[in-house]
Length: 229
Image (cartoon, rainbow, N blue to C red; front, side):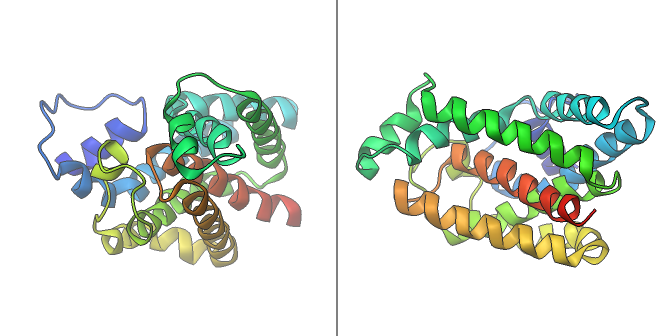
C-alpha cells in the first residue's frame, strides 16, 4: 500500500499514514496509482454534488471549491506557472526561468480566471456522475505523456515520477474508459496536443506542466458531457 499512500499524499491534502523518508524511485512506483487516487477524489466530488442542495450554480461552485481543497491547488498552481512561461515571447531557456519564478504575471491571472470560470460552468452543466470519472481520466492520461516527452529539468518531483508503470495505471482507469469512452479519448487527445505545445515551448515537460495537464484535461473532459447535456 505504500506506493498508493505516497500518491495520495502527493496529489491530495487527504490524511495518510506516516511514511518517513521517500527513497529514490518510490515516486516513480507511486505514479502508477495516480488513477486510483483519481477515484478517491472523484468519489468525494460526486458525493458532494449529489448531496448539495440549492441552485445548480451555487452547488457547482461549492464542488469546485472542494476540488481545489482536495488537491491543495497543486495542479492549479502548475497551470498558473505554466501559463506565464509558455505564453511568453521568449526562448525555451528564458521560459524555463519564468517557470521557476514564484511570482505570477498577467498570463497566469488571465488563464486562471478563464479556466476556473469554465470549470465551474462545466460542473454545473454536466451530469453529476461525470465527476466520478473526470479525475481518473486526467490522472491516467498524464502517465503515458510523462514517459513520452522528455523532462525539461533533470531534477525535481516531476522528473522523479517519470518512467512509471503506466500500463498498471490503465488497469485502474479501465472502468472510467468503459463508462464513457468518447469523453475519455477526447480528453486524452486534448492532453496530447497540450503536451506537444508545452514541450515545444519549454524543451520538455516539468512538474508544473504535469499539474497544468491534469487541470486542462479535467476541463476538456467536463466540457464533452456538458456540451451534450
